[in-house]
Length: 92
Image (cartoon, rainbow, N blue to C red; front, side, top):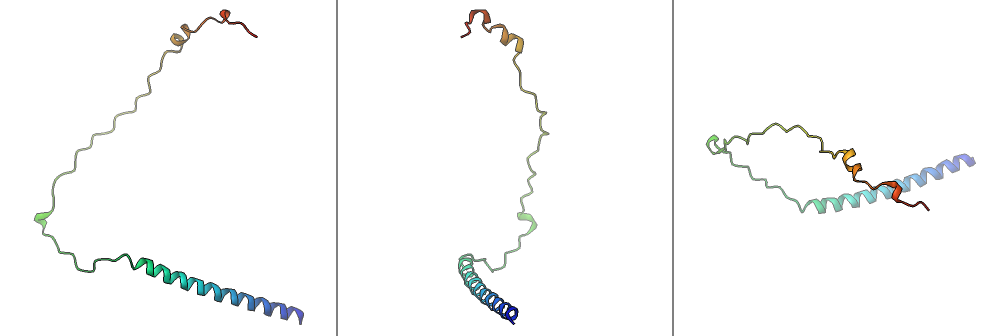
């Protein structure tokens, strides 16, 4: 009997939660409709255009991309040639 009472209370609690959720969703749907009413679409039919008014210019010609060139590197040996000699340094 106790278990039946617990299940009944759980069902009642779930039912109350679902009712509150449904009410909240209804409120949010109404707010969404009010927000969306700001946006309007022109319902008048669009005039059809004749083929003579279409712009027939060709698109600008595209050149193939140039191959990527590796960045220029300085010669490592050349940059080390100007490095000071370690014999001039005093180690502490």
